Image (tube, rainbow over the protein chains, first blue to last red):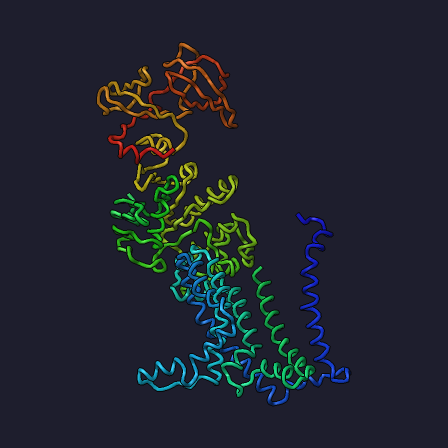
Length: 271
Length: 358
């Protein structure tokens, strides 16, 4: 329909304009702020600031919690994906209801509800108290942040894993068993490698938002626990040091680029 | 008589209320090439999957080499399967695919290397070790699937319509290769197909199935020349299946004309079906044959002419290398030996089972 080049340029121009204004320009501005000081002179100071103990600590904690959350999401999502993909029981419907429905609610609201659940006099501790079990002090700890991350980002792990598992032909699994593989060997040597593309995109889609979040950590971590996302947020909203905030953002971008390169390389291997 | 390697005893299987197999009994002899032949939905693939362990029968037993393996998991059975759509591991190269079963069994790597080389040579894919399955043609993928199965030295190789997705020329080449493989390996092949020509070409023993029941089993020659019922006659090759009356032993009345035949034991004046293969009908000049006929249509098929001939109120199918123009008035003549008399199905029920749904 839009065979000639001119038409396709015209048709895509709204998106190109959108991408320019809302993607290219902001990234350019972050680079500009990150690599200059208040006088506008070029400097690496803002990037080197990551070496300051409080920044390094926030980055390390963010990486740590993002890795833990991603791992937990994977361990929860993979078996669920297997069950849904193997049973083929109107799984689309179940997926929508169980996994996508919670995403209809506002992200901040969902996170906030965990505050009510986890706080010291919250729902969880009331139940434990009624059962005469010891109280849990989870709120304002890294554990609460991990719970929030897992809850918020789990669907992004399930969907790509489910998709890649559903694509595996039953006969391929039968073939593995036919050749002598037991259930574990079939999982390890056939199912897991064949679902690698789904695992990689799931990991990417959970790891990156977990690494950069500041909303979950400020709500569930109180003000004491600072992740790199919170540090950057504060530079912009409290100290108004856009140069330092941008410089730290660039550091975070390095992680994201590494993650994308890894997933691109594995995509190429697939072909 | 060779040893019975696999026995299916009173096997019944239904899927969601749909009875696929009903009290089926089948013996498969060692070192034979057995083909399960029938239209789709006749239960042939289900039998193969029950032997392979991918389906479990509702009732009945599977005996393998004297041992009851009905409940045994597929990975414990001494047989391997070549799947219809190859089912290769797309994340592994050809050599890794072939090595899969051997690695599972912890064979030494030098042994595995030799086996890969041997198997690739056997299926004419030398030098393909490091190609990925997706870069191979359908025929090559099928060869890899066969190589992957046979390196495990199974006693039985199960093949589920393995040539179904290949084009005609390749399919014919692969048929000869499979026969050669079977002879070189000296193992039992159980082959599933709906292609009667494939079955006749390759098998030692054909089991013709329809709607979950075995219609007839025997050598290809026997199945083709002496079909036991109208279904078998119709399914295996082209044929003229005509209602007739057995006048007495060795004389049958077809469409009002008496024909000599060689069959006996059908009683006197009993209704029967006769099968006459199109290539067994001779068209001779008027007055020299048994039944007067008029040619109503001719199609050139390459090897022979396919002619429609009207005689005694029936449209006969005739194959001949000699052309008779449309409108020629001729006689039909059939060698008594080429008239195959069959019992009519005794009940409507049996008829339903034996006549293919058109």
